Image 1 (cartoon, one colour):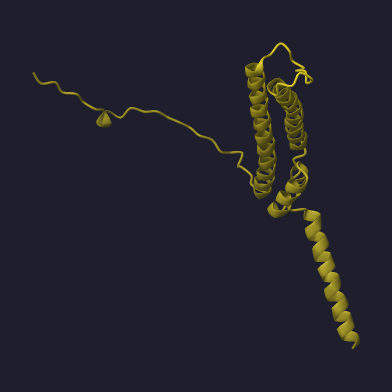
Image 2: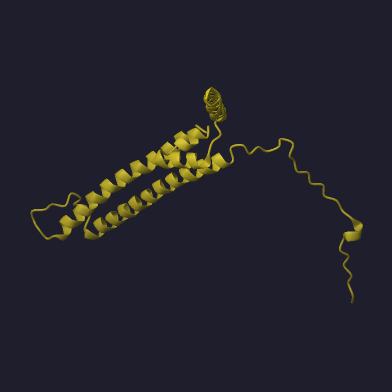
Length: 168
């Protein structure tokens, strides 16, 4: 019985030591990096030890979020101004009296298009963040040989030159 307990204890301690050695290596797993970036953008890059990419991701996302907010506000303003101009009610006043219905419709449509493009851009940065975390985790141990080089040596071989013959 004591041998069984001792064997179980040794087996359990060996498993703990093996796990701690694997944890100390900190090998990035692609699935873990992908999930981390999907949950919180930039976290997968930090997990892959590419911390310098996280501020770039946040700056890109922040710029698109600000653009979405500004375009949405302008779209709502011009949409309501167009509705005020179109309703033929004298009690509603157009906040942009310098524009007629056509001008208000143009601005409304332009801001709507910019809003849609900003949402597409934010989605693109988010997806690019996830793909980058996955690819970086896959290529974590990929190293190039520093002695790689290309050398081009052009040469002329008389036997392979094209001879042109003219016949008259």
